Image (cartoon, rainbow, N blue to C red; front, side):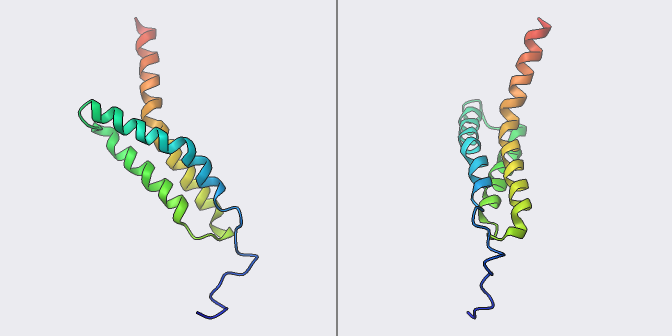
Length: 103
């Protein structure tokens, strides 16, 4: 490998790990809790795809190349992964609030 293949110091992003870590810290426990909750109720049903997307987007945020030019994509993937992880419990919370307000 020649020296021209290595990224220059200006292209290297030294804090590339912050966005994936901030999204993975609350996202991974939520995904695990969602998985166990859905498994105890006979399967994820329509939320299975959302959990797969959450895992895939969080993994994508970690495996993207560590270049400054991909910082926006890394932040978007991490944020979307966290949003997908928050969707099932958020939906259940809103459904519970609507149900309790109607009685």
